Image (tube, rainbow, N blue to C red):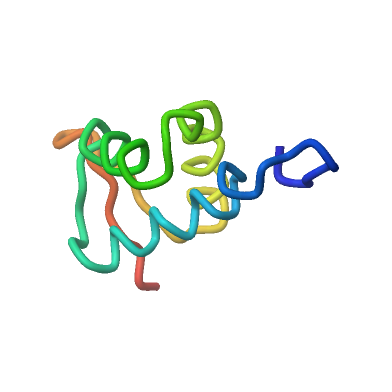
Length: 79
């Protein structure tokens, strides 16, 4: 999913969605899952829903975001 091929639309790629998510979290610091998904689909398009979970996993594995279970929200990890 991260490595594009010739049929991949780069607008809906994991890297592009991850970049948008980081931008949103750096502005608002904490955003709920549903609100973040709504912002991604509104800004990037409905086809971004397919790669949205992969983008979240990618950022979480890199240590860029944290998940707060009590609020069902993602936080920007500055560390």
